[in-house]
Image (cartoon, rainbow, N blue to C red):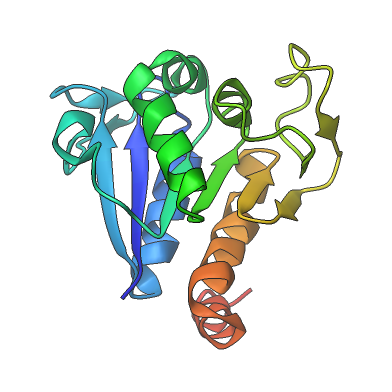
Length: 180
């Protein structure tokens, strides 16, 4: 069984966090949500999320996938957290999937993981990184790095993550259950 980590920061985009977590669980992937502290996370639109654990308790674990939901200021908290930065670099170094949606690709950029990659993100969210090859597509897969544009692409993004971890058959199975 594949294992995925979804770090949750205060001000994250709830639609992305919940959609990603829900679809990965439907696919039989073991998902751990981790807050940056021991507090309930208040997402960008006021939804309260209760993480499974905090980042300190799993920061040395290795997952098959680390996926960052966007939203502001959540994406900036992920970008600025040294534990998240270390975790991202460690997973990339170990050839694990690293993914981010909306404004969260800026955390991957800060970790130095997007250099030479085709990436996407929420329009304007990567303007501080002019060296990046930013595309306007809904989803970009470049090696072990997967990025997506925003809340409207969350379901397709999560299905793409399922396909990358578990294969096309599992993605199709989950997509059929969603009656798309």
